[in-house]
Image 1 (tube, rainbow, N blue to C red):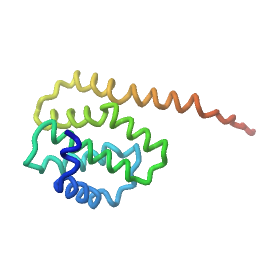
Image 2 (image 1 turned 180 degrees about the vertical axis):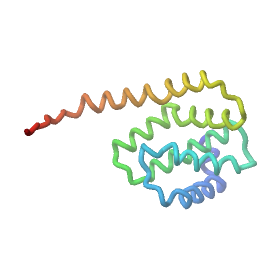
Image 3 (image 1 turned 90 degrees about the horizontal axis):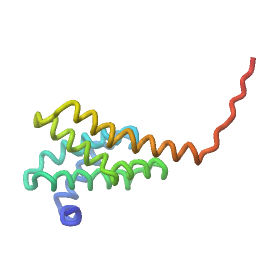
Image 4 (image 1 turned 90 degrees about the vertical axis):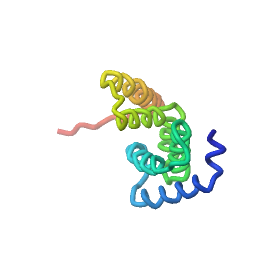
Length: 140
């Protein structure tokens, strides 16, 4: 589904429009959800496609933004992991369900915990074990 969407003039037009909208934002892992907000706004205006194709288009667009960004490699890797592990896709579903009034708040909390927090904790756990800690000097 991704290739058929990615190789269209509509996709290129949306990507160019997105880049113009986020030009003032320094892209980081901390604001990836903000970028996703812009992506969702653009994709929602497209009337030629529906449902999962819109979601696929949104994921393609945000992936391209990350790939073409000036982020450092480790931060880019974190963002790509969020995209490839389904966090961004689940977030899109969450936003769409909220917009359509289909939210059960207990389900939202469970989904958020499973899709966002656990992978982030795992990532930082791996990073912390690979990076030696610096000893602090305490002076009186």
